[in-house]
Amino acid sequence: MGRITVRRPVLRVGTAGVRGRRPDTLAVEEPLEIRVAGRPLTITMRTPGDDFELVAGFLAAEGVIARPDDLVAMRYCADTTEQNTLDVALADGVEPPSELMRRAFATTSACGVCGKASIEALRVRRPYDVASDQVRLTAVSLAALPDRLREAQRVFERTGGLHAAGLFDASGGLLVLREDVGRHNAVDKVVGWALAKGLLPLSGHVLMVSGRASFELTQKAAQAGIPVLAAVSAPSSLAVELAEDAGMTLIGFLRGETMNVYTGAHRIEADAPVM
Image (cartoon, rainbow, N blue to C red; front, top):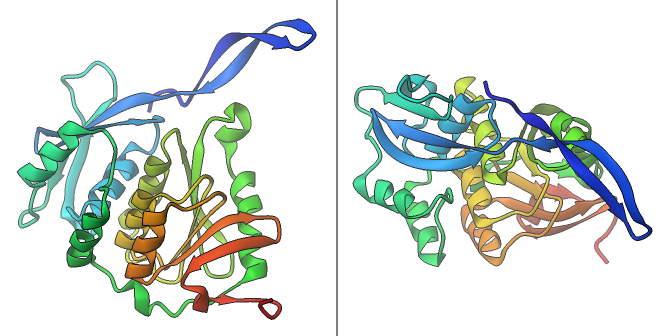
């Protein structure tokens, strides 16, 4: 595994003038090329660490794999000097990424798909019935999640420069947390962890993210069968549309004792009447 953090000198400056020089800890950002059967699929910028989980979660989100045994092997490529290229071997019978997918990822380094037409495409290949998930949560248990997420962010405490994604059970217990410079990578690492343990679909769970709830994060949660996605910041309009279509509960601005419930409010047991 490569370095997660590096130390660099920084000049500390304030309104009263130069405060002096000191070392600062930075989160590492490096490219990871993903290959399937030796053929390049995409490149993502990530923080080294949990790379196997990242790739497995990414392939699950794209509908390439659904079970641990869909993956025969993953290895760092010997033809590269750094551990920044991973080659994946799929099991017999598992369809490799289509040429259309390869061309799409050759055009952009962003993970996921964009645009309203994509909701229709996702509906066709959505592997789990998230809408039927009967999980119920209290506002009190949800309000405690941001602090639990922050307390577990070891690298963020040193750098202030990483996104986090945490998987919680219905009672608010933290099962796993992953950090990365890319918010989508952090979610992929969580999903990859769950895939390796045979936990998909993640029925009855909550995915908590440290930033905003974008379309692609909502997509990844839906593909993993997660019924509740909560974010510290705002969702996008397309994220709300996708969550509503998938039957997910989408929560934004989860800070302090309040939150905005954009979709799936039936899963939230409020502690007082709605005013």
